[in-house]
Length: 263
Ligand SMILES: [Zn+2]
Image (tube, rainbow, N blue to C red):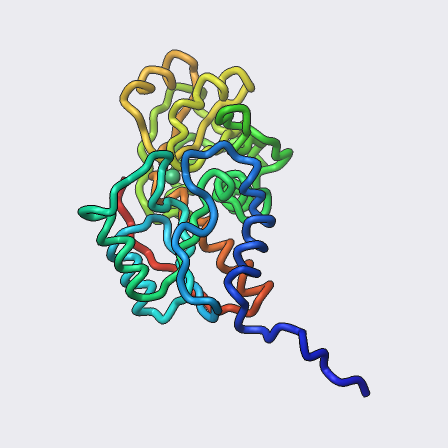
């Protein structure tokens, strides 16, 4: 019998730097020109034993994460968006909440929309049994969404109902395209601007999160249906799948903190 290797890390805990390195590589964060400061945004305790996941970062989510006993909060929308920000007001309160609790904050924005295994769009595509899946949804030269074919054509209403079952929220539907849905593009979050690209790719329907007024007529004039399922609701999938992946890899228990914005 051989002795257990003393350097073998114990399942159920991992040192922070190892975890951050693993996440950075797994999510390929260096590949994305993203205003979000993807990666470790706030450094907390050295050893991670418990993870919390949420879509957004607020005082409430940070405090809930700390109260749940998490050492790491994994989010899609972090605290830093491409500009220097003084530590005053709510920004200070958020940072302070994390620091007081010795909580690590890790953000993954576009890399988590686009990720082929745990990305928001990959998870939605899988839930809808999308076939012939291919990259779609250009963001500064990177495809962050997916397109593909539904297994059978379905009415726009049936499709919207199906999406509603998936997210639990009523969808807003702009029926600018054909009555039946089959060729679908998916861009989680703010994808209202992808209608022209959907039309050019021969898609009949775009599923995204949040509408934008300036794109209202696009659906009708490009002849594409647009189903808005909510920015928040289309982005719960990635952080949950990523936290589950961490459990698989390192044995870390995790919890999803559900704070819907209704947007
Ligand atoms: Zn988003």
